[in-house]
Amino acid sequence: MTPIDLATLDTVKGSNEGFDVQIYNPATNEDLDIKIHVLGKDSDEFQKVSRAQNKKRMQKITKGGFRSASIPTEEIEQDSIALLAACTKSWSGVVINGVPIECTPENAVMVYERFPWIREQVDTAIGDRANFIRS
Image 1 (cartoon, rainbow, N blue to C red):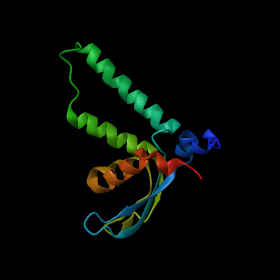
Image 2: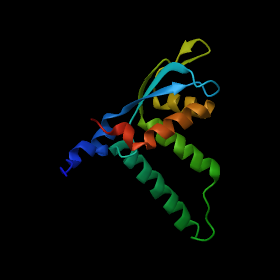
Image 3: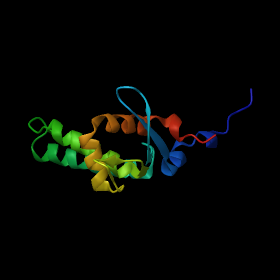
């Protein structure tokens, strides 16, 4: 058996380069011609934002007393959206009410809040390491 070169499975490098997520209609699975370029969960950016969010949560828990502190579900959801927005680097085909939407962190948050089915597709793609392995 020939040993595999682990460099061919470098998900950190691939995650830092990013992946184009093709967005599909949630009702028909039709290709919507929307592409969102994202970094993967092994990317430096994902790890940096995730660590900062976890640190903030831990500070909140220890400040309030380990057993008494809790993190509201809404805050966890907002952190998840912020993490996706931080990993969203560009897009094409995002139009709302006939107006093309520029890819900015603020607009990414708005799109992911308003269209949870887009958020779900992007979140799934970011978490799938296979999307970030270059052959």
